[in-house]
Image (cartoon, rainbow, N blue to C red; front, top):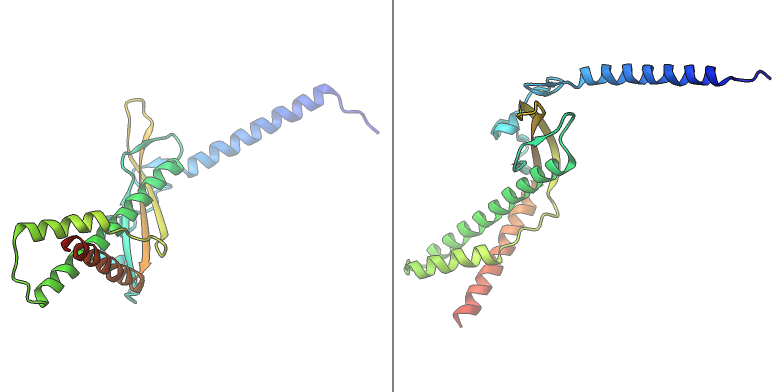
Length: 193
């Protein structure tokens, strides 16, 4: 068996480093930062909250969120930026549930013939909604993530903005509005006693 010299090992390692370096540079050219994000991926219509992007079946509600602060990164944004965008989408869902409960409460008070429109009643309802409504995110699923860098910081490092799109079945969201409305009504009745 032929013995491999240290010189041959050194040359093999050196060639491997150049080969890997060349492949990495080629990959970086493919994923280079442009004004449209990675590899010039076109911005999806849902980023701008275009209702045409929603499915035509009407089976789902969609919620969009964006990371709180653009993140500086030479490659891609971190998982933390993605989580921030997902949390913003979850908060949009929670706001939808709160608005649905407020609408139901207004609808119920109008249909029951309640003519007391004093500020105390309105304020107590708003306070109860803000205090007691908690959106259950069990049915909420991430369906798309979009990352874009259109500017850089003072050191030339790209600043990334991340958007997350989430969906939930309409029946789940509507059920949550009904459950949360009952909860708020019970809390208001208990406090009135």
